[in-house]
Image 1 (cartoon, rainbow, N blue to C red):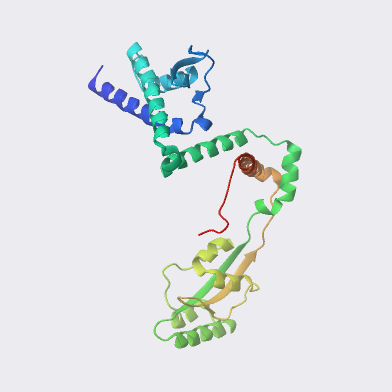
Image 2 (image 1 turned 30 degrees about the vertical axis):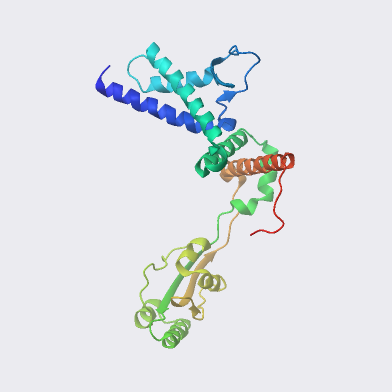
Length: 296
């Protein structure tokens, strides 16, 4: 075996050990181990026993196949034994971690286990396939959720507070009056406005995007305007906005066929949430949970 191949093999073996340890900690979700059968003989479909934990044949075969896919030459008997050794060592480390109490105290280990269980519940929801009538009923109830969002095109003049906030307010008020009188926005902005680091694009934008440029107060004022309307100065922590609503399009419902994949994906997501909530309720009902009368 060449030095490069040997290095690749060693890296792969190390990766398998690290991956196996992570999967072992999420055993309930990853199904690496099964309950042992009676007696000390290996049950059918097992390749090893570590204390009372059984390492399954399918786990061993999967990791052998993963290692073989990274090799240009066939695996040797020694390679296969090394894979089994890694699985045994993984299980020994997992059992040692349990004995040390890491499952109950190490935040990273606990987070990995929770993630593994959540992944298993989400995977079960991925297999959920709603019937056509269920899709139609769900879409009819949630049509607005899948609608094309409203869009607004707004132009504005910004006047910074500067050292004299009241003088800035007066400038902003004059800008509003001049716009209402029909003067071109560019001229008024050039004479009374200040530059902004992130100017609002002169294009139709969803309200959520427009909020990123203007903030909530200015967005609310803009949405209250009729097309062609000019706002009074809207004060923000940075200064004053004078807003001109150029155009607005309302939210539009989409035909089901054009959003069917999104509808099914959302149904699966909510089904996953439902199954998780159901499982958590079952676990809590079966557990002896005691909480303090007053939180610290």
